[in-house]
Length: 279
Image 1 (cartoon, rainbow, N blue to C red):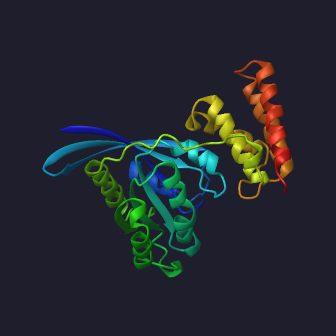
Image 2: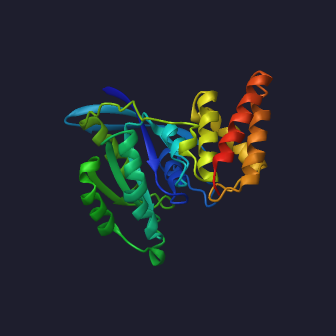
C-alpha cells in the first residue's frame, strides 16, 4: 500500500457550510449553529482508495479558513502550501457561486497556481430555497477549466451527507493522478501603507502579522478568536473603535509570552497601520 499525505483547503464565502462539510466528512456529524471561522482550523482524516490498480492510504489535512472576502492576507498565510482545493458555494445564494469565479479562483491562482480542484454546491437539502443547480456549477467549471486540474462538480448536503464523501474522494483521486509543483513565492507585502485602504484591510494585516509572529495561523487562531470576541469586532464590517480595542487586547496577550518592549512595539506598529485606513 502506498501512503501519502496531502494538505487541502475548503474555500468559499462565509456561511456556505465549509465547516459543516468538514465535520460531515471527518466525523460524520452535523451542527445547526453557525459560527464563522476565524483564522484557520485543521482537521485530519484518512481514506483508502485504488488508483490505477494500486492501493493508496491518503492522509488528508483538511484546512478550514476565514471565509469573509477582503481578508486576503489572512487567507494567503492560511493556505499557501495546500495541494488541492474544494470550492464551496451555497445553493440558496447565487452570489456565492459568482464569488468563486470573481474572488476565490483568482486568489488560488495567485497563491497556489493551477492545483487540483473540485467545485461544490452545498445545502441541496433546502430544495425549495435553491437558486441554481448542477448545470450552473458545471458552466463555471467549464469556464475555469484552465484555472485548475479537473472539472469535477457536485451538489452536496452537509446536513444529510449526500455526495460529501464522493467529493472528497474525487479530490483525493486527482491529487494522486496529478503532480503539481508547490508555488512558494506569493509576494506578500504585509503591514505596508500602500496595502491599507479600509479598516477591514488594516484588521486583515494586523491578524496576519500576529499569526506570522506567533508561528502559524492555526496556532494563532484561538488567540485571535478570543481577542476578536472580547473586542466586539464585526468581521463583516469592523468598526475602527473595536479594532483599536482589539490591538490593545492583542498586545496584552502577547505580553504573556513576549518581552514587554516587543508587545508595546507591535501595538504601536498596528495602531499606525489602522490610522492608514481611510474609512
